[in-house]
Image (cartoon, rainbow, N blue to C red; front, side, top):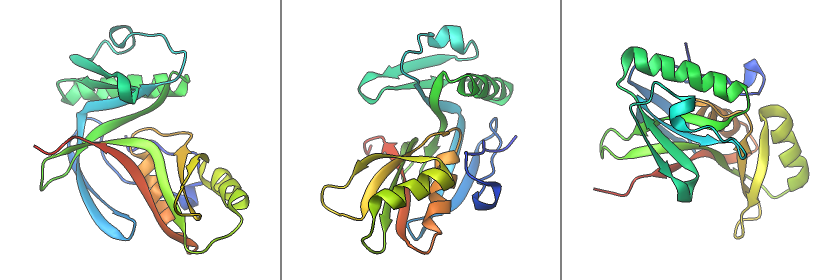
Length: 197
């Protein structure tokens, strides 16, 4: 099993391969720089779709522990690893396909600092030159399944978009694909990081 595909065409995907049940270091380019992060597949951050009323215990019997981060509309789920992690990711795929989850992603850890990060379903995009923002956003929607969240107050050619089919590391894959387009200054996946130790 590899990272779940996003909704954009196969030719545009930049697959970041990892196995859902095994830790791994992933390497990718983001906003012109190389990044390495460790995948922690036994720790999962998920955001339920609005109106989804299942409890974590009901939806994810594999979960050892869970914690709601209400201010961020996130739930953190932990399993033992190995087969439990594999079963958890299979169940998360079912819930995502059924429209119960907005996204689910493994926690990531920065190898040098050890700080954990949660990959969201959002990407910050900046174009090299000013232009028709409506046409640009429509092109991102058609090619990558990205929808506008908000435009930058300070930089006219920058905005935050959301990946409609975010699961696993699909937001990183989409950000890499957008970042590689010649008209883009940078595209960077948005993370929530824990405070420094």
